[in-house]
Length: 330
Image (cartoon, rainbow, N blue to C red; front, side):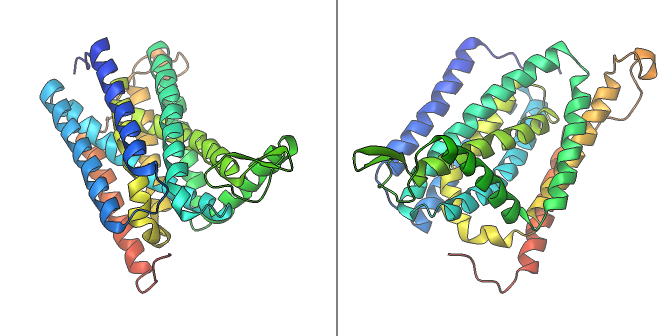
């Protein structure tokens, strides 16, 4: 494939649409503090998924089915990783006892921060790939190590997240005057004439740090499925859209996805192997095969999409069977 030829105008329009949708989301849904109903969450989740599918069809029409397949593989992978984000967000909300009616605002700000973090890593990754082909070795090894770590933490995510949050907050409290009381959705409040940081801001600090960690995982993963920055950005943006609604839609079921981390670990390891194979195929390192390309099979986009989809289906079904009879968390 020759590559996706994306003009500055298309980039500008895409970014404007993404920003516009987030602003629209905030103005219409999160401006007034409330806990959205199941019906509201389901409707908006369906709308955002439909938009993502329509964009994928646009990619196929504009640049061909190959790039369309890369987009859908990237979108599904990022959506799955985003669901893992939601699990961590749930732990953070619980740890800081964020009132349910204010969780929408925290989530939306956290999702915008996540997109900003990923945008930075997307362009850093693109620059690294263009300059050094051997960066695929680093991405692949990093994903495999991440997969091993994720698999080892499987079933103990809550303990690890709470331990990480406690370290972050302990550091924040060393430098900032804090209070344990909320003042609506305010990030700071005045007590006896002195300004204090509320738990709302501390929750956002924890979410922001988590966003960085997830960006470090997700960007190498999607670059294992496509090397087109435009597709990488679009897949991430559409995967994050509607995440707030998805949180309220499946929030009570998140604790039942007990095998999700193992499924994601397998997916990351699979993409890591794919990246290493690609790096060998494009090899220029002098100490590997004398700097010549290594004749190894490459994993196609169709196979990647099939493996990712099958893994998520098996993981979800196995999780629901394993937790059958367990009442969803409130």
